[in-house]
Image (tube, rainbow, N blue to C red; front, top):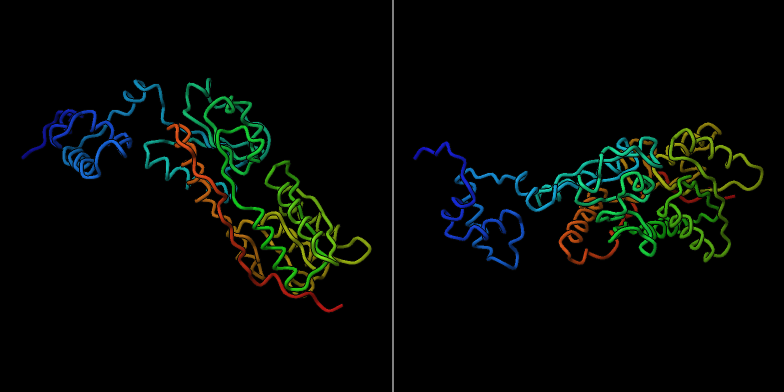
Length: 338
């Protein structure tokens, strides 16, 4: 039978599936769970497919007062990690009929210009990294349904927070290095005012304070390879006992530490062990390959979007930090006997 040139309606789908228009609306709006059976939902979706039915999302959203658009606020688009966060968030959003708009801070931190005349009118909600939290004031993002990523749950602006288990990641790094025999560590800390980096510094200091005979030195650097190289070189050439291992807040900082070590004639890991945090593609491009903590950026984005959908739906967001995993590679080894 030839398909009619007339655009099929939800009434046509309801008639073909043998259900009410309300049931069609529930199923195609992904609101059917607990209201209609799985069998009925499958029948509605099949009828819609057979008829070539496509809902008029613009009309429906106008009627409901929603745009089904979410803003993802990140420090920068050029960062591999946040590209993964976007991929995960967009995947879950698409499954629920939402779109995701990216909103980066051009300099990586701090506020960015408002891309909307009225963010509250253009958006249903916001997912924001704590590293770009200042941008929220520019878009009135803290007045919309908000989920914060990498943010202190006790002081978050958001209706929900989603965190990676960074504390456990630092624990794994510290235990790995102490187990190899390192007792003097240099912390190459990201010079970024963000809760996630405060947690790294606090946990590393606490772990070493609890280990007798250890010493911790700290150097700060912006998250660039050149800045990390300069800070590491200065720390390693300061008079006095030299650290035998460097704990870096980020894989890019670790790359800078590699350059500094080579400039002053140190071999990794023979003279100096180095660890990172993120497990970017850079980690296996370095020689030797970098021991680092793997953070699942896509799962992070997925969980952020799931939390926002729960907030928009009046449900309790999922709880619990996302597990992280130390990936030991060739950049760490026992220290050279003194």
